[in-house]
Length: 220
Image (tube, rainbow, N blue to C red; front, side, top):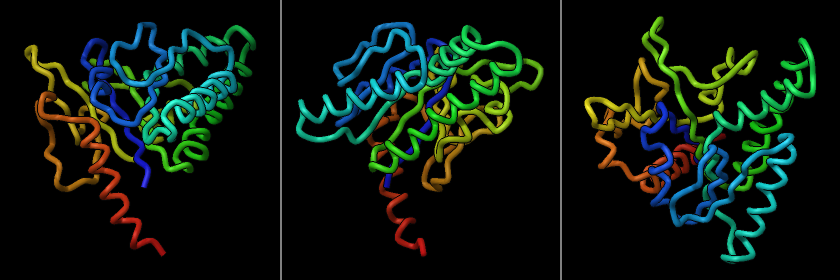
């Protein structure tokens, strides 16, 4: 069973670093900086439309298959917050007034539908990496989103599992469940949180995939 996982945190918290131990993976990097690890990846400096981004993603998945004689097990989008910002900027340049947000919704739906109907449907795991901003009024962290997309929960609503990296007293804590942070898990054997040094993203994906397969056996 495929896994859809969200990783979020404030800037410079080590989100991308978690991907360095991934196996059989392809990272689609659109984050304003160079991807730093020896993991198959594609740099996407900019794109004019979601279709352009998705066409490039498919092209690089096929290139991965040609090079390694297998399709990637996991696709990482680093970061979906920057992808959303670029989509929003593109819509602002092309449209005016209410049409900005109606077209923004269409672009976001195209992106999230591709994840579900193309990647997940092809048994690929999907990891979404997102920046988060602290809201002092609510004492909670918010993910990027605008319009109806934000109202329905943003990228948090598109995944089954979500973890959050908190930087506290120069230490990084990874949360699996939290009311304060955008983190949630249905895995009862996971703790509430752990030091990030004890977390391995590939092992976590394997755990989630194994548990999902066990649950799927009971689907009627």
